[in-house]
Length: 87
Image 1 (cartoon, rainbow, N blue to C red):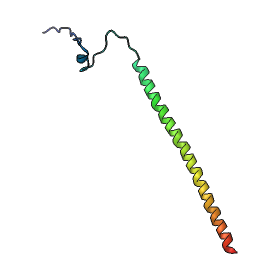
Image 2 (image 1 turned 90 degrees about the vertical axis):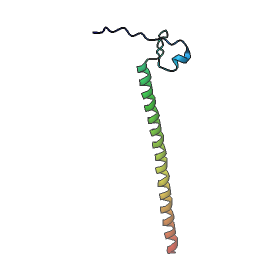
Image 3 (image 1 turned 90 degrees about the horizontal axis):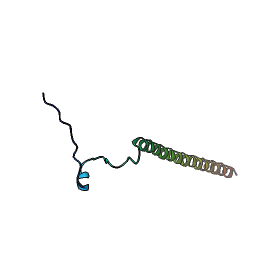
Image 4 (image 1 turned 120 degrees about the vertical axis):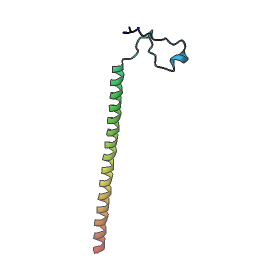
């Protein structure tokens, strides 16, 4: 049976070596928690989605109001035209 030797990671010697493969920084503390970043990203997506839906709802409401105004104007014009034709 063969004994397993401990695996030693090779530290990159230059920035060029580090850019070709993922190497965690060993001397730097973590700036942001992955959990915080994930929750923030989901929250941002939901805020953008809800904002977009609110904007579409407002535009739809304005459009429905404008259509009602046009229908009312058409009905009034048809009624006025009918009144004038009877004379």
